[in-house]
Amino acid sequence: MVRTYSFEIGPVVEQLDQILQMELSSVVYYTHYSFMVYGHARIPITSWLRDNATESLTHAQEAGEMIMRLHKRPALGIAAAAYHSA
Image 1: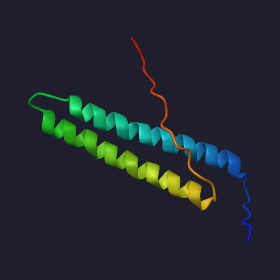
Image 2: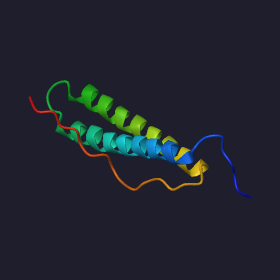
Image 3: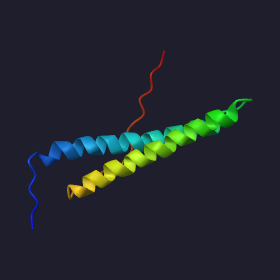
């Protein structure tokens, strides 16, 4: 049985793939930065960063599940870093 939708799936999946890749990128960055914190306030800052990594992973999983519900496959990739130099 073929499922029909009242919207075009392609653009929706593209957006969800972008969200998935950005959230996965956030997991990597939050985790990486949590390793780099040192000093007397390390524990609460590290905890905050790792909590954000966990939240981003949850968002990535949700986006991937939404893609699968549309009978498509999530892209395998991580968004490129957006560095801003002063």
